Each structure stands twice: as structure tokens, then as C-alpha cells.
Image (tube, rainbow, N blue to C red; front, side, top):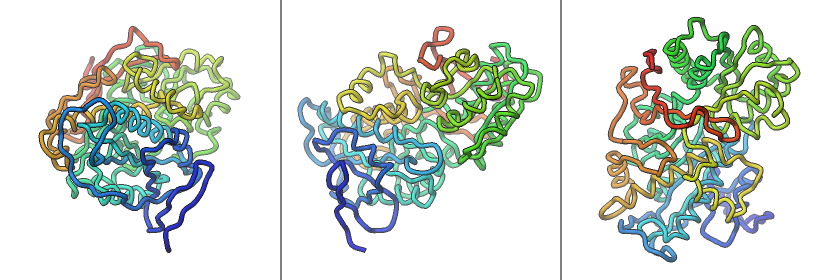
Length: 438
């Protein structure tokens, strides 16, 4: 096949007809950030547009960034029949424009490529290979259910995976090239910790059925419940990733329970709200930041379970002053208002790129995948409080090193509107995750 040019409502796009992932590179231009919404409409394949030559690290300067672009890739699933994470792309592109308006990174423009893997592991791998071929310094702020296929590809190319919110697979927690900034695997089990503290006596756990993940996460759920004094067995109910009918799982979750902790995505929670309301459920709901939110509960705000709900967070809520630049960048770029930017995905993308900038600007000499990986491995990330301080030099040896790259195991609690619970702040769950009393 030959390359073609396709015109959409966002203007002409060059589509390389080489096989592989849907690699979308929105180059610096006058287009507004609404262009990112095209991810779910058209698949654009990028062939490498410029060399991946190294850049020299020096302090950022005011004014327009110049010189060879510093390239990155951000991977997520946007256009498929599972949970969509297109807001990650919006956040990544917002950071690109914002940092370039500040003078770039070490004086060089940041060039972010976003790649929609459509939930297909073959495309996930292609995203990584194409990014490496194009000269990407790192994979930043990505989230994919298939990230396990990327890790060995990046490992072989000495390329870092930085800023993910939520590691899932074993290899993501053990590869020396991965630098998660979220608090998985603590995030979802933290809901049970809060539920027990709130006095819940019969807790159901609605959880996505993710092969190789759910069983291990359930150990942490149970450990945390025990650590906080819950003496019963948790009621685990599995939900298929691509579920569309939630009547059965909701019926199970509301049978004989007073609280429901949810290891579910935003789309899943949205899908369960109607049958939950129809069942007359009054259970208090607990769920993760960006999943249990105003989008997933829209139209059901008056339900007791929603009013009393508690959100477990890996990041400070979006209304916190630490996100002023992010909110300003979204507004300045007319970001689509159809997405939730308080989500784990969007916040991890922005904070991941913030960390990327910190690490890149600490490098003396050429900024290459190798030099970036080396620098990241000794960095303590200070992002002004978006997350706790994260020391990438200290791995976690609990569970025989199964979660070695779980650098942050702290959680903050909030309401759906971002109001802190019990004053906010960070709570370390390292002990309770192992069944130890807090």
C-alpha cells in the first residue's frame, strides 16, 4: 500500500500505510487540542518524520524552544469496546504545548506522539516499536491493559517507561525500566481500608477480571481488610473487561452487603449505575480516582450510595492548586469537555511529563534513551505535591519483590467533587497491604 493524505474536520493528515499501530503525532502547529478527539474517529499511522538524534541537556530558556525535538510516546486505548482513555492523549498534548510555550525542555521542543492501541496487544507492541524507531527518549504517562508486551521491547532498547498510574502485569513491577508514579497495587484495595474504617460490616468487591492481575490483587484486598480489623471474608464478584450488562453482578453485589468497593473503570461504573439504582441499592460505594467520578455517576447523584461514596486517590484532586498549570493548559487549548481530566489517566500523563522534564533537565550531556534511563534510576521526583515524593532509587522488597517497582504506596481519600476526606494528606498502606496493622 502507498501513503495517502486524508482530510477530516480537523484538516489534512498524512497516513502512512505501513502495517502496525495507530501512531498519531500531532506536530507543533496552530491546531487546538480538540484535534485529539480525532483519535476515536480516524486511525492515523505515523512514519518517522525526523531523526532521533540526541540533544544536549542545559537549562530551559524563556521564549520559543529551538533545536532538535525531544521525542516521547504516550500509549492508551481510545477507540475500542472497553474503557476508553482518550483523556490521556489530551493531557499529554496539553503538556507538550504548555512546556514548549515555556521554552521547552533544556531549550528543546517536546514532541509527543500519542498511540491508540485499541486494546489490542499486537498494536500495543507496534506502538513501542514505532516509537523506538522514531527516536523516542521514553514512554511517558501511558496506560494499557497490554503494557506487558511493551516492557521487553523497551528493555531491549534501554528505554524508560515513566509516569504510569497503574501497573498491572508482573513484568511492569519488576523491570528496571519501569517507573510507575501511581500507587498501584494499593489504589483499589484502599477502598476496602476506608470501608472498614467507615464501619462497613458486609463488603462486596466488584472487580475487573484481568488475567494474571485480579487474583494477586485480591490477596492485597484481603490483607488490607484484615489489617484494619475486618473479620469476615470479602465478597469478590468479577466483571468482564468488555461487560455491557451489569444486572447480574450488581444483583450479587447488593445481596446482603452494606458497602461495595469497586475495582472498575469509569465506563464500567457508569454501566452499573442504572441496575444499581433499579435494585434500590443503598450500599456506600468506594472506587478509584477518575473512575468513581461525576461522569460515571451522572444522573445518579442523589442516590445514597453515591452521596456517601469515597474516592481513593493516587494524586491530589484536580481542584488542588498544584494542578493550576494543568487546568490552565486545558482551558487555553480548548480541551474537549466530554472527558474527565480528574482521572488517573489524565493526571498521570501531566505528572508523568512533569517528572520527565525534571529528569531530562538533570542530565549533563546528550539526552538519549540510555542517559535518561540512568538519570531516572537515581531521581527523587518532586512535582510540587501532585503525588508524594517518589524515590526511583528505592524498590520495594515485600511480596518477595513481586511489586518491586511500586514506588508509591500512599493513598489520599476524597469525595467525588475532590473535597478531602479527613483533611486529605497521604496515608502509607505499605504495612496493611501485607496484612500488618496500620
